[in-house]
Length: 416
Image (cartoon, rainbow, N blue to C red):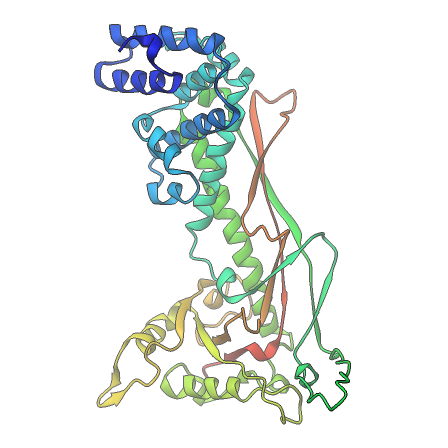
C-alpha cells in the first residue's frame, strides 16, 4: 500500500513497528518518519479527541516501560489507549519529547543533538506538559494505592464543599418514626445534643523535572518522585487517623465507660472470650443512658497492633482454635493490622495489648474522614516555575480532615 493511502495513525503505528523490528536508523524507518513529519506539519485532520488519546498513549507507554501494572493502568485508560501504548512501552524521556514534537507538528531533536536542543523541545512543546502531567498523576496514584490503608476502610466518608467546619448530629431515639394517627398529622423530630464536627485541610508537596533528568534521559528518576509523594499522601492520611484514635486513648473521653465502649481487665484480652465480650457490648448499645432503645449497631471489623495480628487472623480463619474448641467467630470479624497502634515512638498511648472492634462505617461511623468535593485521592497540577528553576514544576495536594464520630460504633479492649 502506498504511503499516501495510509492515515496518520497508520503511519505512526507503522513507524513504531518498523523501529522496533529494524531500528530507528533503518531505511524504512527514515522514510516513514519523514512522511509522518511532513504529514503532521500540514495535517489538521487530527481531532481533539484523537490528540488527547495520542498524548495519553505516550504517557501510558512511559509508565509501562517503568514497570507500572497494566491492570492498574487499564482502570484509568481506554482499551484503545492501552493498545496504542503497548508497542511503545520502551519509550524514554527523550522519546516522549520526540513524540510530543511530532504531535505538535514541529521537528524533533535528533538523538545526537546537544542538551540545548532537547531542553528547548521539552520546555516549549504544547503536548509535553500534558503528557508528563498525566504520567506523573498516575505514578502518584499508584504510589497512593500501594499503602495498606486503614482510614478509608474504618472511617465514615464525608464530602465537604469548602474548608468551613461542618456539624453532624448523632443517632437518638427521636429519629424513629411515629405512628401516624387518623388525619395524617406528622410531628417534627428533634436533633439530639450530641454531635460531631469535621472539616477539610490541605496537605501538599511540589516536585519537578529538571534539565539533568532530560539530558540524562532519566524518566525513571522523574516518575519515582510522584510515586513517593503518592505513598506520602496515603501515610499522611493514615497518621492523622491513627493520631485521632490514639489521642483518645491518652486523655480523651471517646473510649470511656460512660459510652459503654471500653473493655478493661483480664477478660478484655484478644481471644474468643474477649472478642465475645466486645461483640456483646456493641450489640447492647442504646440511644440514651436509660438503655431503652437499642440502636442496632452490628460489629464488623477488627483492628489490632502487629503483636495481635496472629491471634486476630486465627480467630477469623481457623475452624478450631484450641483442643476440641470450635471457633464460633470464624469468618465474622475481618482483621486488619495497623502498626501505629503498637508504636510507642509514634504516640504515648500506644500499646501492643489494645485492640478495637468497629461497626461498618457506612452504617454508623465511629470516626470520620472528610474530603473536599468528595475527591479521596491526591491531585497533581503543573505550576509556573520560578525564574531560577530550570525545569517544569508540579504540585501535589490532598484536601481532607479527620474527626470523631459516634463513639457507640466502636469498642476498645485494653487487653489487661
